[in-house]
Image (cartoon, rainbow, N blue to C red):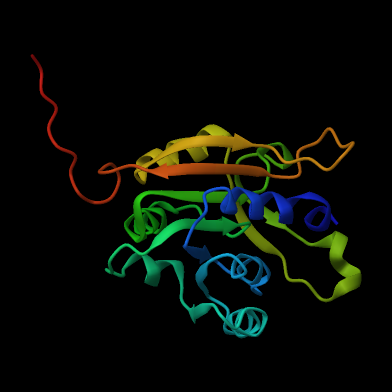
Length: 204
């Protein structure tokens, strides 16, 4: 219900406000976001699950999708191509720095990274386990471990990867005082965190 009420529209608006010509969808899942974005721009996406990538191709025929792990993406070397990268409820690992550094390399100058994730108020930091008990009626869900971060942790991680956080949002459904998610937007910085040493500082 929270997707339909608030988070789907929130992440879509956060991406489109930058007017991208090409978006990288990180952990694209079944392709609902890619399908919406493809009405406005070109979309490239990847996911570890072959079934989800197949679903994304069906949902978004104009997109370009492949089966790829985060580690495999991080090891790639290719020219920058995307104006915006988006990760919508898809960053749940502890060591995300190599992935985010690779995303930095994939973005054009002054590109943007949009991350929507679980709000830090929903659980303590560190490793958690999602049991999907509220979705039991919809199927046999396997427990999923995920790594929680505070807002400050996210901002530090983005800085380490070479980004400057420019917006922090807490989307809420109408009439609900509790945030449905944490929505971060960051700008690609020119040198920090990309594997290329920053130029030495100078003093007068």
